[in-house]
Image (cartoon, rainbow, N blue to C red; front, side):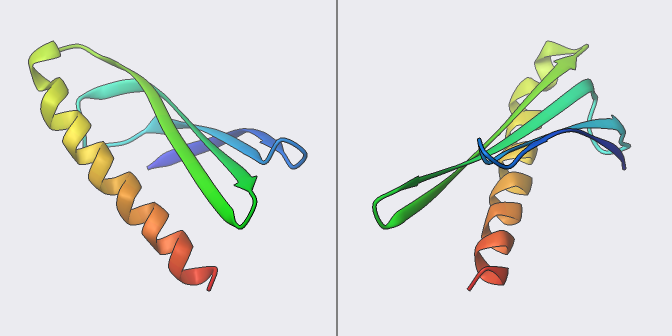
Length: 82
């Protein structure tokens, strides 16, 4: 995959990137945003993705794959932060 960092905002705890080239899914114009929110003794990661899809019938599969990838990535971040 080819990615570009679009924004890093330490004060807002926000990271945004684009995926410029990827062979896995039938999507394009991919923008991912990660935001960390801290409340009391909890830290929450919000990880969202916006994209364009040509074939709407592929959307359920694409959502499932992205959800699995993001869950694995978030779990990996949790493991390395311990």
